[in-house]
Amino acid sequence: MTASTTGARVPRSRRAGTLAAVDLGATSGRVILGRVGGGELELRHVARFGNDPVRTRDGLHWNLLELYRQVLEGLAAAEREAPGEIAGVGIDSWAVDYGLLREGRLLGVPYHYRDARSAAGVEAVHARVDAAALYRRNGLQHLPFNTVFQLAAEGPVLDLADRLLLVPDLLAYWLTGAQVAERTNASTTGLLDPRTGEWDTGLAELVGIPAGILPPLVDPGTALGALTTDVAAQVGRPLEVTAVGSHDTASAVVAVPAADRDVAYVSCGTWGLVGLELDAPVLTDEARQAGFTNEGGVDGRTRFLHNVMGLWLLSESIRTWERGSTAAQRSATLQGLLAEAAHVTAPVAVFDVDDPRFLPPGDIPARIADWCREHDQPVPATPGEHVRSIVESLAQAFADAVHTAAKLAGRTVATIHVVGGGAQNALLCQATADRAGLPVVAGPVEATAIGNLLVQARARGLVDGDLEDLRALVAATFTPTRYRPR
Image (tube, rainbow, N blue to C red):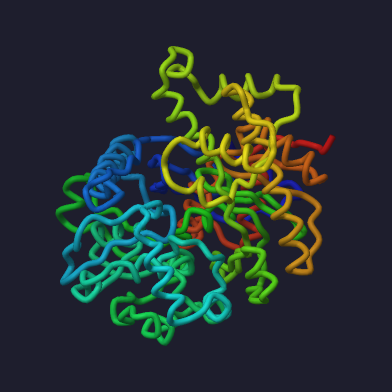
């Protein structure tokens, strides 16, 4: 789609170029080609693949080697589709997880953030610095899988490592040989000072993490180099790799098509990241107690947000039903279940989606039923009622987080922008508008890939301007769906 520049604040450019975005989510990955510049912003999906964890005797792990193989195949497919045209590649992924290396070799298979081992790390860290003091230094919402806690649970292998690389940085290292940490993702580790954007090496040493393993920091838009010779041979050409907002939410927020600052965003996928974009972190004890985090954004912005359990509740419920004893359960699909949920007229339970019981993989419907019994709420009797309960509960959590964020930051919110996969869920978007009492603007669905592409495009001179200019291009080329509170 080509942007109309009449009356719109669209970034200037002299030409369009083709770029590749590697976008890795917690359940799937994709390689997307984008044509950006000259008033254009067009996407083409080239490859999509699953991202399935593997449980071994020592815990739950990411199958990172398979993921890397799929990335290489996806980039090779992109090069075949646009031979000689691709000007660069950027990688984003989920946050907090990492690989430990020694002399460039990976020490073991990276753990999945849902693995239970991090509980011991929480105890170890809090024995040295209490939760309030930790928040004053890193500004992060307490989540038991934050990198700082995972590292504290590593044991002797931590002493062997000479480098830590977060997932997108590890993949970029395998592609280019560059060992760096991109700031937006580094801000999710619990080891970055949110005021300076630099590693807090004193905090690392205080909690028993050797500061020497922390790599040099780079900003989104930094050139990382070309694919190594052996990688280029597999892909077809020595493509250039650029650091983007490598935390997928940082890239998604770049693509929120908002002209004003009085908006909240919900980046809705496996997790629902709900919050505001600010110029500085909010490190008050009220923010800590409300469960808000201060993560780095592109161009030095702060993503002040609350992590909500997100669409994981739906996807894990469907996995449970697929293993069910009846043909109807085994054939359940998200669209069919949402249609069934839309016809539920009786009141359903609104449960606490952030209850820790919902974090590990397993039988989510049974856990919801247990929560309802414990809190004297109606227990869903059918999959449709379960899905409606999940949707209404997520919508309430999103609404609460928006209003709390506004209060904590001293901001007003006039509109909620929902981007990511959740933007396709009309039932959820309407419920969010209803419960928040605010209009919801839904889309684009591929916000993360778009943000990835826009940061690359700006770094390569295909577009220019600030974040507001980039967002104007998104607004001019993607038509959102609007929901008004009822």
